[in-house]
Length: 365
Figure 1 (cartoon, rainbow, N blue to C red):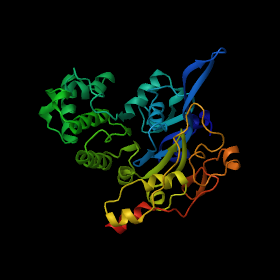
Figure 2 (figure 1 turned 45 degrees about the horizontal axis):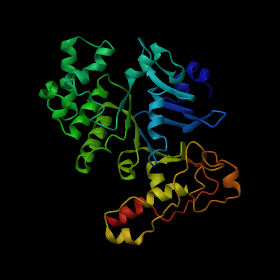
Figure 3 (figure 1 turned 45 degrees about the vertical axis):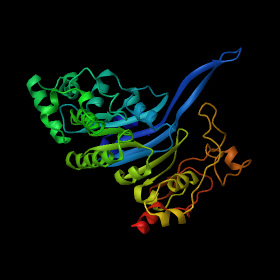
Figure 4 (figure 1 turned 60 degrees about the vertical axis):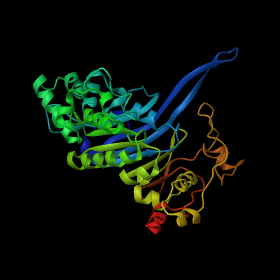
């Protein structure tokens, strides 16, 4: 579907459940010019990512550090400008009850103002994402002031309401970020994201910087807020145990591309891609007997450079079943539907994996 078709077509004719559609999104960074020719070199951080996120659900993007998860998230909101591709976001049309798609990659300033009212982000680092010179009230009310919502008294009331919603005391409004723990700071960041009643929240590794004991509290809070407010999440993570807890659907990324995508239970019960099998085998299981009995898949060599990725399949240099020379080195696999709702980019899918996480966890229990 082209950009013009998506923008002109009634949203209900596309799929009334879709809130976000990403089509062939790419992002390349100019890193240097080398040699006498001064030829430019580009790092391909995101290399043709496509997916849909449905209303009220959570799509998780998972993968190793540097695979392009956070860059994808920032391109979606145009916190950094994408190189190519389309990002369609469904927002309420001002003055009506209808909804329509906005192509974020082509949106003007007025459209982006509307998008940012309905799509927010919670950042990974709860310390760096809060201005240390501002009070909590100023931090949370800043989006309200930027969009001209309410007067000072009404914004103050909204701040107190949001603080209580995320499990903090309303009296904390006049404190500064340095007076809070990491978990409390992340709750403040979540409150700020909720200020404008968004429909979509991008969660960029929201618990990775927190203690394990605090992670569960924040994840439970996010689940409760999603149920209460009907929120849609795009969840960025590298911890599969966390992803298993929060996701509706999971997309696995490797070197800038999605290589497998499926419903959570399908992916954890029946992974197909060799890389997904390796990720699953690295998740610790809290039972010594089960942990010792299962086989750990160790990937050889390092992740290739995104400046000069391998020909053909990007995973072939680490894949235990790759045919190189052969089809794996000559032809890049397309993301195709292997079974209903289960998408895979691999020439030799492995439906019978060596390690199935949910079954092992069930055995451990």
